[in-house]
Picture 1: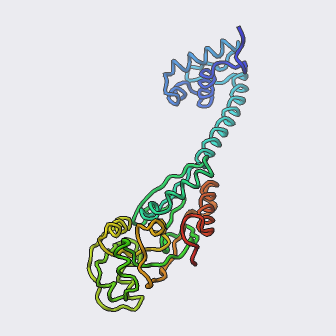
Picture 2 (picture 1 turned 90 degrees about the horizontal axis):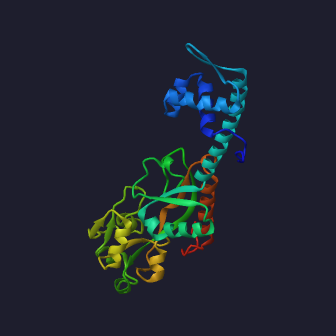
Length: 308
């Protein structure tokens, strides 16, 4: 009958011996291994029988390693340490291949989810988890990256500019055609879809009209708290939505919504990709961040060319 490949005793006996030698106690080793002291004693006796010499001297108040036991423990301890380091490296390598990125529902729906899919096709070994939230992230440190409009008040996150958008009224094609070239007062009298946001930097209809010089009244219209819902309402003919031209480029390209020209406002703030400092980012997270920045700046993601 052939010997085991490495000519080693059963691992269970070695594990029991290593724990007992480290603790200098069968009882403490049993507690660590979730077995009985008798089971530990049985494994060590089996190991001693196979090796042909004693590993412990049994004392009235405990056990002590023999000289052979000390030599074996030294070798096993070093071997177990190397095994532990190798396993930890494998775990970290596996964790390095998972990236978590956050965004609002509008960013996720209109662009990021498709961008993540494109990234995954190029880098199938990296898994990207998406977290969607329409209010500021309570614990941005839990995310590797997140995309947000305007500044973010957390000193521990870094940020990189993605682009600056333009704000333009949008509506379903028939309504947009009837309002082409309309002045601001006419637009203000239409049924408007107002979007309430927890992000104080988000531009609303009132801000848009004031910054373009219209100080007259604007209609109350309807109010929603989710930009994707506002856009859907506009597609359904419920009124005019304030379109972030670059963000909603897929809807404009498909003709689901049409921009009402010529009135347009440059967004007060930029969209940023925020994230942990480079020293705290995994290689995969940095790869995704740099890929997103390159794609946006190259204009290869179905949006218009970047605007600074």
